[in-house]
Image (tube, rainbow, N blue to C red):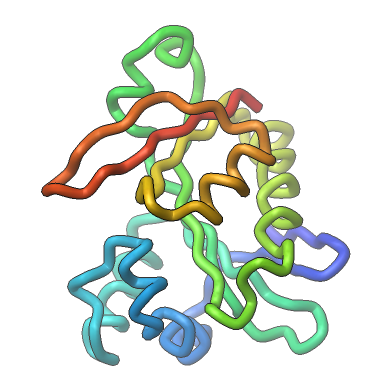
Length: 170
């Protein structure tokens, strides 16, 4: 996969991208928003990076100006509760999570990247819907997903943390 937008290239992560990943994933606030409390140093970041490389569709978000990885989008199996519900139970779905380096947030990069990925998943991969979760206190993610026409699906409490689930039919 190699998708281009005006300012970005979306491609699969490479092992050589770890230094860029480590650079942005060490931001404590970002790790909190991603629920990565177990990632706190280089060895734990490398373990997480390797797990994502082996177990998920791990997409690098690269700025065209410098070709550096400045964030990621990760594709997961669809959330079980969503996949079991109408109308999604008869559709092909996926779940997504995403992150950007702290200095790159709120510049419209994910608003640019996610629609390109949605078109690719719908047109080339046969995905009918996407779901995702965010911490209910993460207002920037909420506003981004609302702007991208994701619909509120539900709220769950996970170990005392309130997560909002959203869904979008592609």
